[in-house]
Length: 329
Image (cartoon, rainbow, N blue to C red; front, side, top):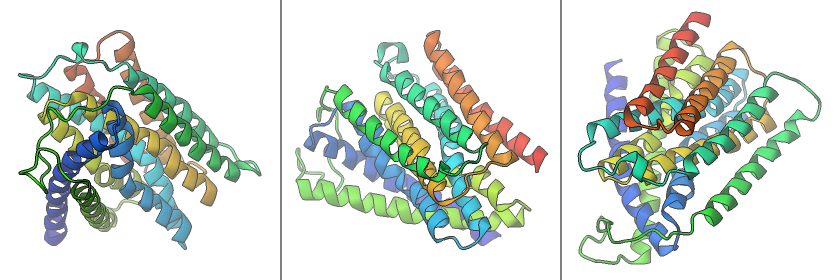
């Protein structure tokens, strides 16, 4: 057990350091591609950091030879959005509270795109939860709709964000710290290299959690819902911490929002295509709590109460989920 704890801590540190390199590189990549600030967070960074959990689902549902393996894949597809909607937003709110001095107030930042993205997410998520409660002959093929939905979201984000990301407040590229404008190859190497480290350390982290789960008497589904998402969503959480620490709140929140859209579509589409996609109590509970968390955030937006303290409270929904999960086991 001590070895696994040490491995978990080492992986968490490795993910954080790799995310430091990734956020530095992905901003320069966005400038090079002439992308808008929000699109860098919702599309570019989100696609990169969503790779670990998407691969977990892909491998589990396509190569898993047992029902237990497929349960892990479905659990990861449901647990990812849950962790982002609760833990990631909650940590962001806490970081905003910690670093309130020197930060631009949220009410002065244009976050109008964020509630629109969350409404997109909520609609898609409700549909996929509904599919988990019914059975019919062509349900499998509906998985393709989720890939199409992400394609539509991708196009929408790229068109909506017309303000190009500026390189004025960017830190020098870590791979070329002496150059004011880094070379394209250096940006690509740092982006890909940091993603490889994030991917490898995330997989090791998940492996350690999958060992600890049975030791704690947790089933495969419960482990995939309760523990694995915390590991696979670490890159998004780390990105949010780093960007908020740098005062780039729009990028931090956009990354979470964009990652949620990927989690609501790509892993779910894979799960629906390759598994019966039939929900039991824990899966249904994760869906209900995720929906409740998003509704809470949308209420904050509607009544202009989207403030650090209230944002941090969304983390309570994960505590409610964990308590409910242990109760129904």
